[in-house]
Image (cartoon, rainbow, N blue to C red; front, side):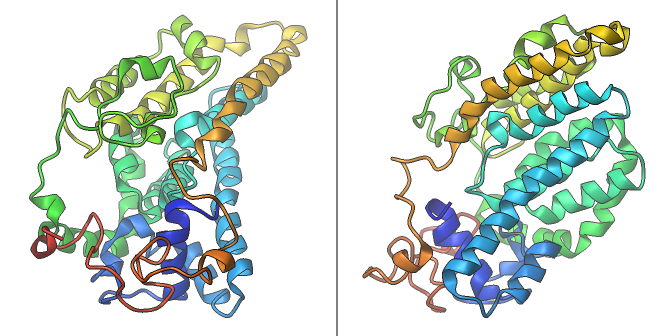
Length: 356
């Protein structure tokens, strides 16, 4: 994991913050607390930042990396109990594995995505657990996935109450957003569209102006099983496919609707299994179905790191002691040096820095 934006942006900023919440700074982001993509208000990230502030760099990175990875385990447990409301244990296990480890969900290069996606798994839990999960998904910080996933809450609108838990993040964000270039830059429905062929082929090259992980789609057997379902989840599948194709512009990158497509297809496939109608003595067959599903999902591990499109992975102590010019990768954010290294201020910079 010691490569790409994890090493150049997210990890250095976490080290620099040391568990603090900074509303004003001038190293890279001018208003760090207003940048949800860095998870500035996420509780466990803040706590670990403070606890690990004096550790050596490589050990600190291990803590940072394992904190990201453990969210996949947490998401698996949450998804299992969410599905247990409707399905038998073996179906829940099948569904949890697929919801958490489908191709689009493998995005360790963006910690905030992992945090938010983890808690989205619990949106359909009964109140107050669903509300807590909704609030935590916002605090996780990856707003694009939260936004495209909101239709899921049609099944459990009470979870929206959880937005109150995320007010510490929402208030600075909505204060900053009108001042940012995102408020004046119109999304392009052509750029970032999901090509139809990517629903069937796993291709490792950029297309339509964005990197291939945004097009990742592999839900294993669910793509076949879902066709035997008449579930209302097909409505969300259609909505997500239309959004990913650029039929309407909600997210800056339309392909992010693939998250909703993947989630909905998995849910539809679980309805198709309809295990409760099977004789108990045949349930052991589901174990073999689960094993086959795990085999089909195993290639998803190749989503990250995206070498050769990213730098080769080495220990942080190597990269940050290896001679590099200020402003070059992995120094360009300046957080490891504690000083501004580049005129570039990020893709969510203020309007007055639009030309930088």
